[in-house]
Image 1: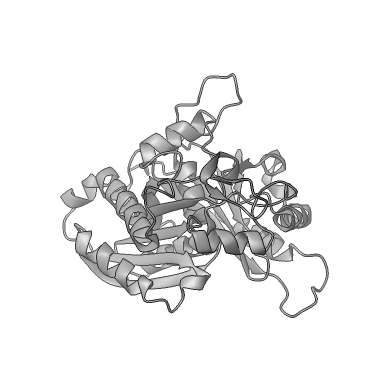
Image 2: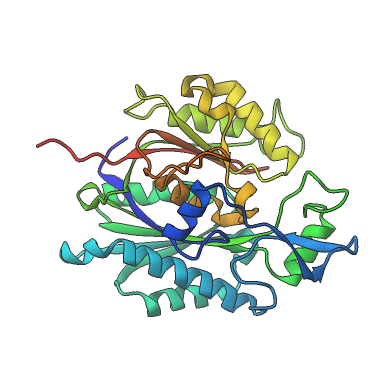
Length: 352
């Protein structure tokens, strides 16, 4: 894998904080942002357990909620990447990752228009990707390829999703996916937006990260699964292991485990089939959802942003203050589609 592109920085707006600094510090301290919101009542008559940036009563319009999440994250990303303005003319691209149900929805074009209107940089080309937890990781690798092929100097990968809407919450409850009494193996609805800046290696910052490896795999198509479910993640791990710097052991692993049982089953099968080469970190992965609930299509971006910050410390111990210094493996699974594995490490300056 070429090292012509790196993860420069990230903007983040999530329940732990409305910017990268606040959110990553809270995460490293082991803080959690989960609560029972008494303004909403679930099918069982009890308050719904949620995690959110904006309280349901604070912002009831779903489109404005998404726009505010996107604006906060993009502004944060640009503030963290102010050095880009000193480099000279750069070509910028944009990928917006949204939940699958928004494919074909008029809201998508309004989001893109708002992004371009508020942007301090000129976006020369943009496109959408619709999916779930794994797609943002996949788009980061596609952004890396665009930069390596000379199509852009910087590509912003914006991953955005929110479950905080009465209709979406009712749908989760009807499908039996929302956490509650009698439903322990389910997700806590949440929301987040991340904007990951992927660019040329000469644009690195203090917390930038190299992309050491990437892999993608898919489950068998069709009604009945063929063999063990989780082979898609195993294949993604196998591909990620072909990166150029596999001599360094993985010291940190993050997964999109969110309480849903099938996701844990896929994870277990995936690391059992091809996890031995990555060390013991995969046996005890960090799970962002424990701190902020499930963020849907924003999950891959959230994991990348958190990986650029300090890792969490055990409760009762001082928080880590150093950002990423060693290989970190990020894993995202899919029930019927694409699973991804992305390996990052601190972007060291090359010796002259």
